Length: 276
Figure 1 (cartoon, one colour):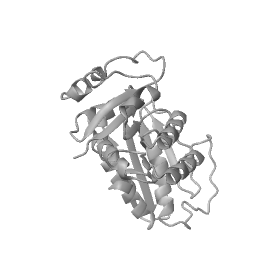
Figure 2: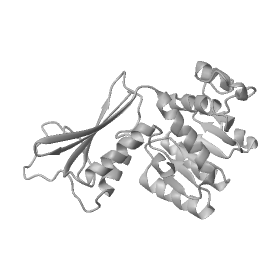
Figure 3: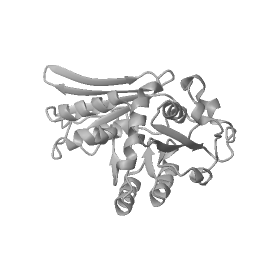
């Protein structure tokens, strides 16, 4: 079995550390490098220090330290770059990866639509595919699929997403992907159409409106990790589809699946569900 060689970008963040542990624990993957922001205090430290008890069998990390740039890890000839940097840096990195024949797996959120379209065009032209994954949790993927199915049968629906206070973007990438999937379930439907004229006594009280009419509400509170509930209402009934992430271990299986699938792709795919 050919082992996939992976580099992790943004390794010192919460998701980057979880990714490092997941990759180090999988027998089909070799972590050949990792890097973070230039000038950060963790640059130069051994990778094994970051995983600790999360990856007790991390002998494969011996001798590896955290670099401060992508160019510093290229000599390891990675097959895949698993990226958890900020959105702007992620797009730039993915463009360079594709140019070099390396498959990007992007876990960063907040990517602009135009940037994603440009990246998809480049991937198609070069024949070097990759993945943009709004959520690596299999449970979250199923939640989105169930919401898409339910959206065909309900005229009124709203999304509530809840995250920790260090989450930079709102709505979350998961919520945006959910809205897109629900809207695509029936491309002609306009959701939440009412005869009454609503008045917001405080701006934003009714959340943000998607082009389809779907609404989304974002909560940011200490103690939360990643949570989402989709509500569907009709006369005399309420249906809700909910997913909760209590720690980062729920993302491990999805991250491993994405990294192993990426080298076989010739186009950019969006969503973990595209490789299931």
